[in-house]
Image (cartoon, rainbow, N blue to C red; front, side, top):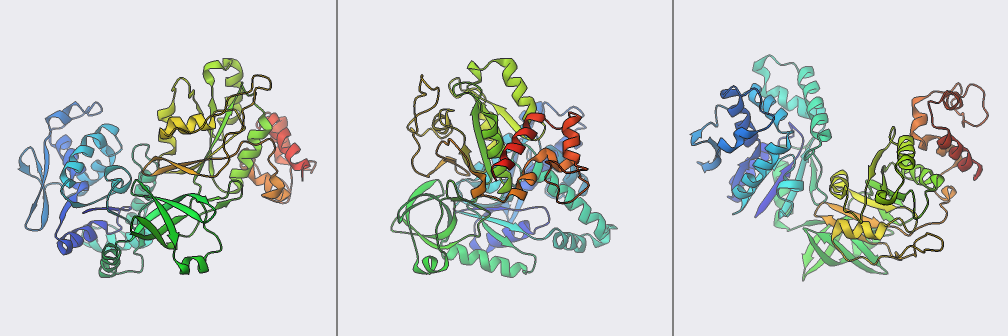
Length: 492
């Protein structure tokens, strides 16, 4: 059995993992000690220039389970006690940000876990053991985590306020690092321990394991037929009667909890939804790829601005992607990228030339992604390139330079175990009146948020004391974006 436990610093995951290993009598791999071991090696050998990580080839790391305890060995020496100090812990946090270190330890962690183990860390369920039998995300409020840490360090002259601030900084660093950031696995059971004792947490985890519960994502729905993606497999699915009574509708994108019976995923409950989009009808979208081209078909700026507005309203982060850059005039491309790059992440790709697709994959890793854009920009081709699935692709009409419609149903496609993407029908017109009220539009242009008008209810059209109009006139806000804002407001 493979059990992955993730969570922020101070959540108690190490103590829980150790107790579980004793109860279940399976090996406990302390991944944090492996990072500490590398930090210890650097400090002990006074390595100043460690950026190239050439020294990693001289390191042999092992963990042995001795007397129900994981002990860490560096080049044959037991260093378990030597790596238990604050200096090494802080330095381990620094080096854990480096890709070379994480890649070096990835194979070691998987080797240690190959015969069954419990691993705890910050990227176990998402990166190290994406196919673990059970995944748990152990968390607690930062205040409660600080209180627990304070109780542990009372005799080390650390104030509660100092510890609280350190944990807030650590959380920020773990969430924002570019390599393997702290993420909740889509298939993890989330346990908030703020008001729970350690024994209660253990009891809940054992209940989930004993009942063999699983977490999955609804990836397709056709009438009453459902498919669920769980543990890198796709199952036909049926909801229990209690689920049908409790929820009016099951959406593609719903995260569901259930059991696998006779190769069927039986849905026992649905996790609370983060959002629900109307077009397409899909839940829990965390990122939108807005795919456009400058040529074939020709770029229409207001179409992009409307999509940005819609997804901003739904609080979904947008990633602007321009395809077919191999046939795009450079000056025209640079002009348009400049308009958007101050407020949005912009990625330039060529599906045909396989250019920057790895970068795009990294940008959406761990997300449930909606792919939007006009017909003919290469949405189906991009999904095929990202997933390896043979999606039907339409040809661009040579007469009108627009794509033939190929996408007729809503379906999620796995990019990897943690990342799913959904195609949407191409559009000729997006009606924002179906999504939001007129006064909501002003809050959906990111560049407006840096300015404060004289009146709180200013719509930025003709009002006196409008900071937005003033910023446009001064060249601080792009005029074409503002003019499209006015066009959108005229539609209401």
